[in-house]
Image (cartoon, rainbow, N blue to C red; front, top):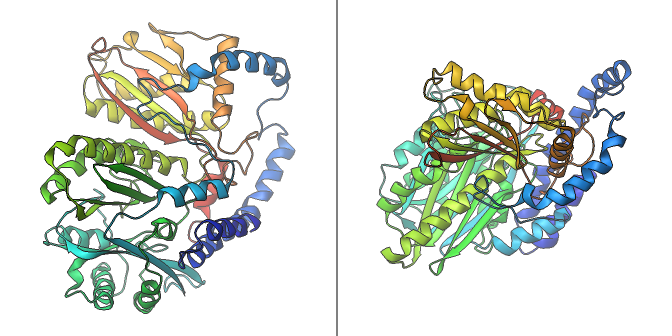
Length: 538
């Protein structure tokens, strides 16, 4: 709870001119504090039982630790530049670090200015789900344009059980203009009981209410988004009643209130921004668990004032998503509610000669925002950066990469700072063998690297105590929550202290440097992830 109070104070300190932010963050912290309390009661007994039976079960083996610590430090100091420098496996070199929540939130304030022509606001409601008899809180967030725009593109989940907002959103793609996006967290409005329309009527009524309050001629100018518990029905009237309060908080200065308002189990808001061709692109994202493309359990809003035509935006978005949000995985579960919306107010004129620079900036921003989603994953304590190189096709690179970063054994090893590279080789071999690719992909050509160190080449492992020490230190250095592995590892993270990753490369050696390369991001698997999802609806 103290951490949540500090987070509220931090938000208020760096954005006290934004009236919406205190209520948004207090609601966000209420949920996090409640989860923390539930986790403590649910898992403390299990932790005590485990440590009583196996005193070292929750920690790295301390008996050999002292003997190799000094060697690790010595070798790592000599190799630290190589381990974390940019390379072919690092298309987005990490450079940001933060000393505190306040430092991180101040950074968001500096970069979070809204593009021209946008405003946003957020408020919260209390309600009791009809499906579960306990009180809950929900944020309602609104992003609006000063004028309707025909310059928008949207990508949605491919899950066969989509939420009502996805079904409505697909219809919105057929409309000529868009002027607002309304987002609620806590409930995803997916196939609820009630009126028999799968929640579509509730979503449309909320859009109509927003349109009336904004003075718009139709609710079809409003895109709905919902995220949270699947199967529960929206508290429609409570959301509608909250719209006037949301409008009271609308402002054109900062996107940070919206970034905070859309969160669920996220540990902190996520904002990325770029300035290009005289205009601005800003992106915010929600997503922490149920992360597996296509897309992930995420809501992403990319806002720009650059006057890019509708057909250009719609041509670019699939490419941008394919190289970013479709290259991440936290837990291999695809959501029912994924949405990526790219919207332009058209306030800044551009020429076609600006397109390459704009597209490059948009792609880079999306890649970093996708990486932020993984780093902010439920219980995440290490981010895995996997580069697949020399693959015969993008499809093989993506599928193999997902198979590797979703390996429970590999994820658990990384959580414990254990460079058990045999699990990496097993995951690669499992995919190649089960997909019938052994003729075209001969593993004797394959090289496996971790932390910049070759661990497998020419059909044999290349391991020794010195390399083991280097790899352990590499993993330790990438931890978000420092210290040994415990029941709480990853649960105390309230800001991203750094952007270091556990770097893994799978070089298939297929075409001697002429094959396809792709970088994917995944997370480790911690006790905190299990705790979060054991208590998710509470």
